[in-house]
Length: 276
Image (cartoon, rainbow, N blue to C red; front, side, top):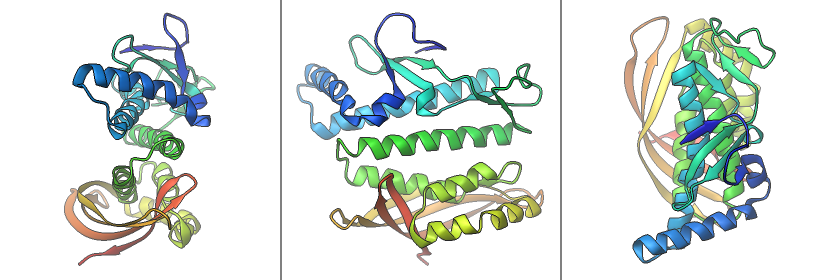
């Protein structure tokens, strides 16, 4: 995978922003991929091609962020307007990524910390939080655009539910703002309004109690799906590691009933209840 900061070199560069603004532009990629799948495996089911495109596209912001974080201790701008990619010649997956935005997050010790493009964060916890927030925002926009030209049904719904549940149970008091913004971003209805209205309270609570929480979804299943009505229910088991006031992280497990509602920007959580 080639990583560069301009759109020079061989091949056609695909700006992420242009693709997401006009999802019909995914069509030629789908066609190339279907031809490749048919040549490799003798068949190319529509949902298989759609799944490949989804996976390969989301690799672009993930790879760009991870590479700079581990090698430069920086997080580049992951906005669609600041990324482009190039497809390989034979297998149509991204073989080049262009970082065309100048903004980045960095640590105070970074040589470029005084540049106007830099957003300086206090430590690596905050740097990782900036990465998660940037990737999640890009992924949300992709899902909202991509589901207008392809239907992945329960797979897309399951992914949206697990990502949102992970976000809602993740926070770091060193820089809680991005996590709280993500909570608001993945919710809707009265549930989302309550979180938005309580944002400052949640910020203060996290900082005062020195809360660090991380989460992963152990199991999840779609139990109801009303495509026409735009609602769904998911049951999930979430593992959480929680530390407060400097204590060692303590594990816990929650079983949750989750209601999701389809919005213009994709599926979002509208209610969460304990499943006992």
